[in-house]
Length: 389
Image (cartoon, rainbow, N blue to C red; front, top):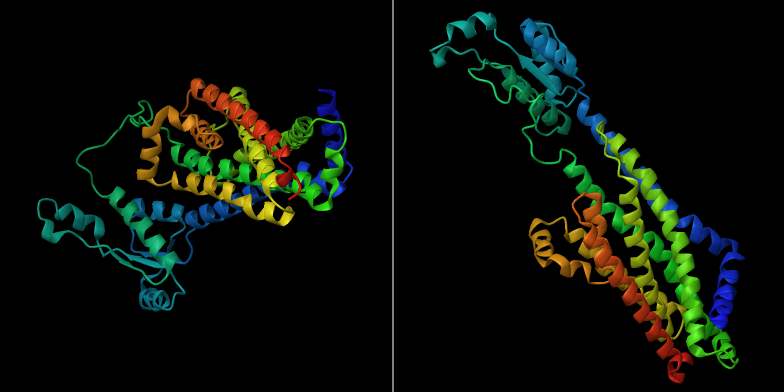
């Protein structure tokens, strides 16, 4: 045990005395997750603002009850003498919309009751080659449909009775559950990949590993000590990435104008952190094995990203309904597969659709697999051909 601690201390000292490596471990995961989230927040905010903004749209002859709604939407009143000019502006994409109500619109509606042929016609001029024009046109059609005379109401007591049995924040949670697991894993994986490659393949390349192996320290202790040092670095990197995620969620909710409380509880954050850490342990163990099998650092860093790509592609495929149904049909099997289980469970926790049992199964599975990777690494260290490259 003392040899393992000595090796781990030696490796950690080399990490923490190198300012560049230290910044990579502590700051890089946070910067990747938080920076990407800020970019998404900015893009989402711009989209929402653009969707809520109506410019260069006009109406003519609208009755008072219609004009009030149009004014709230930013659609402005225009003089009837400007109709031809506004139509020309719409053709040239200098104007987005023109709504023209016929003369005596209100009285014509009353006269048309029981006689659809005499119903007054509201004309909406727009340009489908102009995205802004099309957007305003669709919104205006919806508004006019809502303002048409009604013969019955739908869900009149919606404020008092909840007719929607689903989660109103489901789509937002689903989007977050696709993005954040992938970003957290990528951020920490990048740090661990470089450290693992240099820890074994790098030492092998420099000839330093052979020097270590001729000391009276057990080879299994060297393998375990290097593993422990990487696990410590992985924990620090995971904390950094996790902080980036926790700070990003409220900002993203704010950017898409979600006013309802969508915060997660302390226990949910702890569960997210637990499944993240155990999955990173699994990935770190695999990275160490790849580093031990590789001839040099270049080969190790070339092979390692394949593992991450498999997880990332799998996570992105969960957005597909048929693939998502296939995953759900596997049930508990999802939580037994190392690393993959954490990806899936992080998604489920962010969607608030999980059980504590799945958390326990996932963490236990990852811990067992991590122990197996350390054992395999110890066996590899006893093989002279592998150690000498």
